[in-house]
Length: 116
Image (cartoon, rainbow, N blue to C red):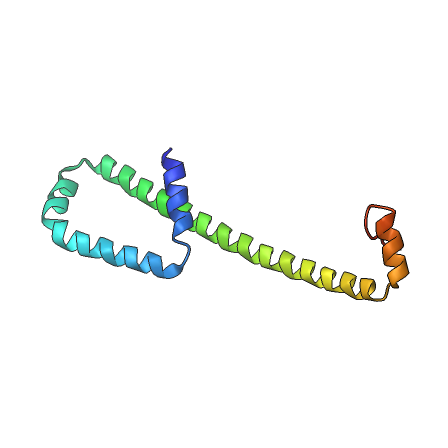
């Protein structure tokens, strides 16, 4: 459940400028809440601070990896689309050279056009 929430949140903030907005909002929140947060942090046992710090680092690394993976997948998809577009263009050139009789005969037989 938590992973799904984090995943949808990360997927929805793909542009980098959202990360800057969130960082600024966190800094402003810390500025106003530091009189409450710092005494709580200092009252925690040292081992709990390390655990929380490790948890925050893990979440940041996970989010960064998901973002980087999504960007890589988008780049690969663009490459596949360009390759498919090039292939379609080559097929269009081949089909333009066919005579009307050949096209009608191929379509009448069913199954559409076939490579030869």
